Length: 80
Image 1: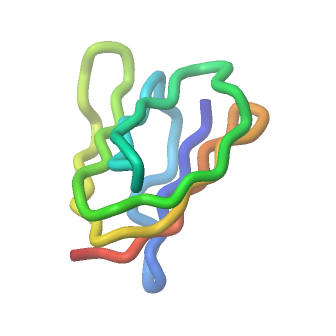
Image 2: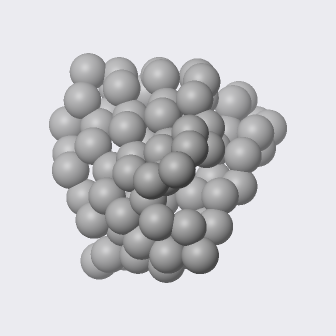
C-alpha cells in the first residue's frame, strides 16, 4: 500500500509499506494491505511504518488524522 505522512511544513514519509501502526484517539490500531476504508483522529504517540518485518519509520506525533482508501494511507499530523 502507498503511505503518505505529512506535517504542516514537510513530508515525513512517502513510500510503500505492508503495515502502519497508529495511535488512534480511541485506541491504537494497525492498517494492513486491503484495509477497509476509514477516517480516524490520532492522539499523541508514535506512528510505526513497516515493510515486511522491518520497521522503516518511527514518527512521534502530537495528534492529527488519517484516511485509508483504496490502498492509499494519508496522515496529516502535528509533530511533538
